Length: 220
Image (tube, rainbow, N blue to C red; front, side, top):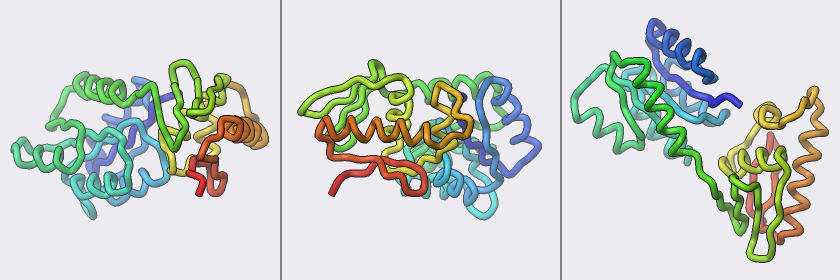
């Protein structure tokens, strides 16, 4: 599955070449032209890295970053700026940026920064409620017991637990299933049912909510 990047930059003469470079390096890219659109995109989609230009109309990159973090979205963010002043960099890092690049930048440096952040963002063990999920060996466990997931269950579980209470669309789930769904929603429902059953066996205090997509939620 391709890693997905959100690029927010109002200068098309720069955003198009950057997106082309990323596409050629096997990244999937969404482009927006202002901070408000960037915030809206992060509410609807899951990204591996976000590239935010600081100087944008409607909502600048710093304000957009603050909104993204306020929405509990922890996706790594690289700020892109034509300014070199220390104050702007400090503001960005204080707002929750993971890194910054000053324009113009070398394409290899951009790709290297993205690789570093995606490596840092890749965890092995995830926790939600009383469930632990080990992504390395596909084991889910509670204090009561543990079970192993098959490859498709594991990929779906990883997506769900990484994003926890964020709704995930069927289209996103189809991308991680290692067999052709042929747009058959029953296959996805089947895997969700398998996971729900395993949660019950383990005495988990979470469940899968299937309204408006899928997400994990804690039992009341």
